[in-house]
Length: 155
Ligand SMILES: [Cu+2]
Image (cartoon, rainbow, N blue to C red):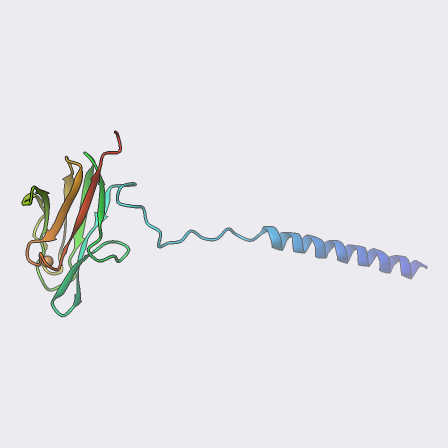
């Protein structure tokens, strides 16, 4: 009788421990870590745009953003100032030109610094007109080019 009672108590304790342990396992799971590849879009956050020259093949150059997109389509907010950072690992010189296209006339509206091979540079740009602007490299305009869409979010 005594032994049977002790055994029952032991079973109860073991069962309780198992339950407690299972409960802790279930609740101690940490939430999934945030995806480190998710980046803040160009139009939000700190207004920094990464546009690194890259050689994608023999003498083939592209602008590459922070998530590896080639010649990325950029988005900007009207009258916001952006810092465009360029790190040049190639053995060629590059220079960012920003243009507007009004009635078929391409006008240069901003010009970044010349980025020598192995060097980096940056410059600030503020879009003061809505619509679509273009960007390209002074030395590789047919390979390194993309669009900038300027939106007025205040209206
Ligand atoms: Cu270039």
